Image (cartoon, rainbow over all chains, first blue to last red; front, side, top):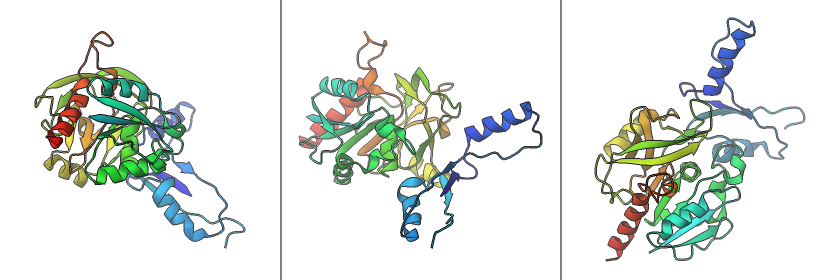
Length: 73
Length: 225
């Protein structure tokens, strides 16, 4: 599950990193956003969506997306 | 009048909350694994770092056994005060609208703040005058209040914006300088600053925080009379 701040909500971590990159010579960087990655094994992938809704993300302020990896149904 | 003060693994302000509550009534600690709220007339969800703030501040505490009872208590009209981490827990439990995000300055900040009472007469500010200024310490890293614009407008109309940081005091970047909000019914209130740390002028120079606890006592005893 990839969880990131919703567009339009100030993401101070992203802003701080965006400001730091040019100082290291990485120019042309914009729209830096920092979120979370949650990896887990689950038997029933249908549980992933309600897990995000109830606990892993706060849908008021975060978007999330679910990716099924190797070995998943 | 009896306060119940919750204690989670990682709480750190529950003893100050207990001592503050005892200045206006009886008070008892309630461990997070307990279901019984011990006949409390009002609940305080204290500050700290419940469950290490893992995932998001308040996200895991919200599912504790004691919080299940607190949610039912609030839905029955019981008074619930959330301070700092407690405010975060009440937002995560959806007892209060909105969410608390990392401070805009990305720092854990500890300072005295000046607050303006926007809504007086409610259960948590009855002892304050409208427009009164309170001096109370704040100390947090996740205190930036956010709600979407439609929600904020509705809260404003309903008088749910109870406390705001005065000019120059909003170090965390809260929208509209919001420091404390209530639910629509007015029986659940959360704020980031710590009224329980401002109950004696000999310690910190202000006893303004006591007014929040005193207001709750007035609300409970008024309801009983």
